[in-house]
Image (cartoon, one colour):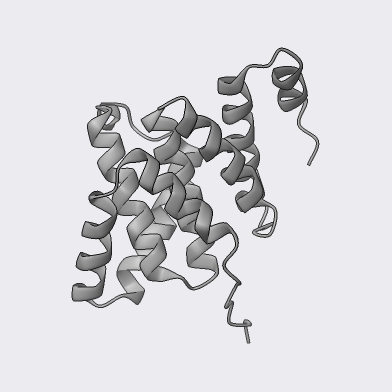
Length: 156
């Protein structure tokens, strides 16, 4: 997807701008059902936000990666990512600011799918594992998911 903001932010070498631009590109890919395009955009965003120690940006990127994991039927991975995102948002006090409508459209279905697909014990353990991750560990874990193969069950 061509992204004018991305081109401009790269021209002025704005890592924060590139991170935001790539985050939005990943979100738009998810909204368009292009799950194969989203991970690369989220991965670059996570690397940049992580390098800037921007917990809020990392958390929103983790929501996107959780949605990708749900699409790949990686529900425990998604639960860890959502737990890590929740923890980062609490640490950055970003819980005061509500998620944008687009962010909610990504977070809420992923969270609901995880809660629906995992039994209570697996959900609790995976979510708690995510909550123990540092910002760097959460980014590393999410980036490792980029290379995991999809196990999508075809719709009938």
